[in-house]
Length: 143
Image 1 (cartoon, rainbow, N blue to C red):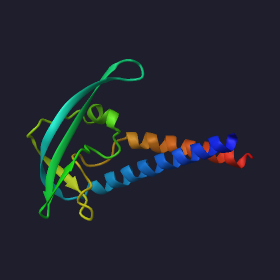
Image 2 (cartoon, rainbow, N blue to C red):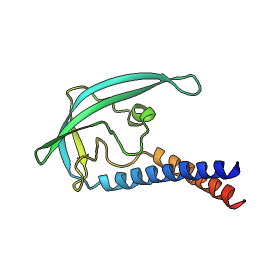
Image 3 (cartoon, helix red, strand yellow):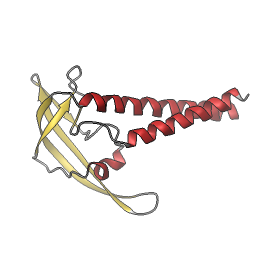
Image 4 (cartoon, rainbow, N blue to C red):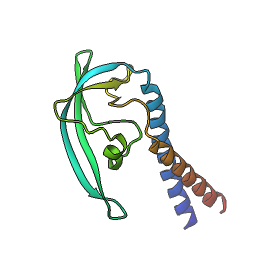
């Protein structure tokens, strides 16, 4: 049974570390990315309850931008922000039809964000993933 739990912790932890590291790297790289003119296509304020029962707000949005004649439609505000924290972390509040700067990867223009950098939340998931990897490794080696 410990092998199964250890393998699960190792896999989930490795996935968290990979996703967080990718978000942090892209966030750092985004600081030097070019800017494209974009427009907010849709916005929706979503009200949910968190684990403590408090109401939290999240803004779902979609924006479009064009690079070298190709148009992209994306939803990312900033790298490393989970969907449930989008609004509370950005505190920006975008409006439909608003013109925005879109920061995009010059080597992969479909990768973009409305804000440069990474959310500090990515560090939390990186640490949590690291702990899961450590627990998984310990459980597997203990056998």
